[in-house]
Amino acid sequence: MPSGRRYLGLGDTVFLKQLEFPAVYDKAADEIYEVDPLGFEELSRCDGALETSASRFPDEFLSFCLSEGVLVERKKPERLEVAVGHNEVPSLRYLMVEVTDRCNLSCIHCYLGDTPGQVLPARTVEAVLDEFEEMGGLRLVVTGGEPLLHPEFARINELAAGRAFRSILVTNGTLLDAGTAEALAFDEVQVSLDGMKDGHDYVRGEGSFKLAVAGIENLRRAGIPVSVATMVHRHDLDELDSLEALVKRMGSVSWTLDVPCDAGRMIGEERHLMPGLEAAAEELERAFGSEQHEPSGDWACGAHLACVKAGGKLTKCGFYEEWTGGRVEEGLRRAWRAMPRMRLSDLDCDCEYLSECGGGCRYRAERASGRNAPDPLKCRQFGLAEPG
Image 1 (cartoon, rainbow, N blue to C red):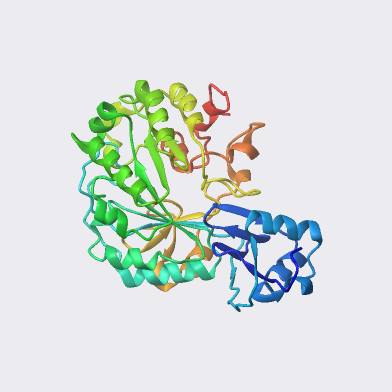
Image 2: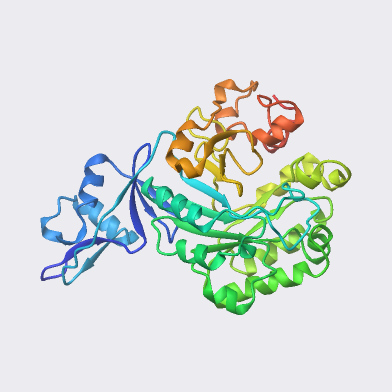
């Protein structure tokens, strides 16, 4: 230990969360650490004015925290507030907020379809973000529609800054000019790339790929971490090798891949876009980075995830309007507590992989065979030709 007095404080991007267990979350690294109650209590004392010599940390644990940046030592005391987020069981860790259903594109695989042009007022967004922070949420995902079309987006951008959770903006990327990218206060921006030029433009419109890639380059120049989301469809299957190389070359922090569901414009004539499940299941293995939909214990898909729709309802995910805990104007925590839930033990699955796969996507399963049925895509990811 260096000579002279030293004072311990949490890292600038490190926050304490009381989930189902005491946890430390580093939003910059998107890392969560489970700690024991005594360690959690001691970390809550690290307010920048606690002398290192007065801490009760075991040497090995203290060294680990310092090496990971969970704790930092300062030469001078600087007392800072140590806030602890207190969540529910199951905990709400990942929150999607559809701030508008307006969009500048008409993607043929859009699950929202034709929308009424709803806008979630900025004052409602502010109340939701404040309560999510109090609850110890980990990741906020601001999405749409195209969120940059929200008439109060500048205010929403301000509201996302400096929070005790990681804020992520999801966009089609076509409106991200250099000035817009420079002004963003989000911790990460996720851009949709549904193939290379031919595949992407087939579903999103001519010229959209070029604009999206230019938007990503503007984000990179602005120093904002970029992630990529891809829908696997019949017209990009032969482009995914090239797309994977592009995603990695651009330094994406994560790449999520999924398959369109029977919703929105995918119901009816556009269903030809759906790839074969066996081929799609293999391509999904390319994904890397963050996961939001994991099961937890006996809770099925989306155990820690919810979505605020543009109309103000808190729903299980973006696909559902009727699976809701109520309106967020009446309180995010109250709506989360009232959310209907599904357990793995409720599912009609007789499979050795159930605890690992978590039942997959409930919406996809429901559209295929029924709400309690297996997810046919997830079954194929685990090598099962038929749902089991």
